[in-house]
Image 1 (tube, rainbow, N blue to C red):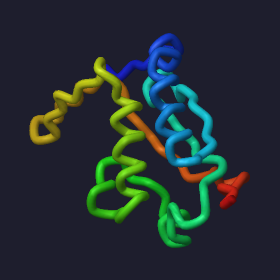
Image 2 (cartoon, rainbow, N blue to C red):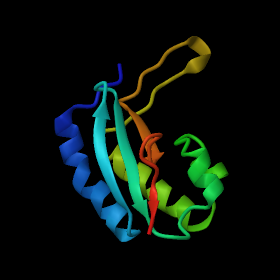
Image 3 (cartoon, one colour):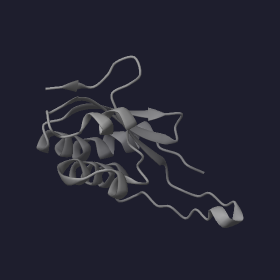
Image 4 (cartoon, helix red, strand yellow):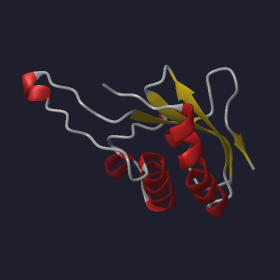
Amino acid sequence: MAYVSKETKKELAPEIKKVLAEYGVKGTIKVNNYMTLVVTLRKVPAGLFTPKEIADGVNVYHIERLFEGTAKKFLTKLLTAMKGDKWYDKTDAMIDYFDTAWYNDIKIGEWNKPVEVI
C-alpha cells in the first residue's frame, strides 16, 4: 500500500529544493492523504514552460512524451529527487495488483492560485 510519511518528506526535501533552486523555481512540498508526495510549482522563470504546458499540467508518467528541452530535464530531475532511494513500484495492472512506495504529483500552480512566471 502506498504510504509516504512527513519524515520521508523531510528526508527528500533537501534534494527537491536543490533541483528547484538549480532551475530558479520556487515551490512547495506536501504530503497528501499519506500516500502522495506533491510538489507545487509557485514561481517559474519565463521560458521554462510554454503556456500550453502550464495549462495542461504535469502527468508524471508521461514527462518524456509531453515535454521538451529544459522543461523535460527539470521535471525528470525533480521526479527523480521526489522518488529518492526508497521509492519502488511493483504494480501489475494486468492482474489488478498495485504496490508502490508512494505516488508522486507535480503541479504547476493550483486552480485558485496560478503559477507566477518571473
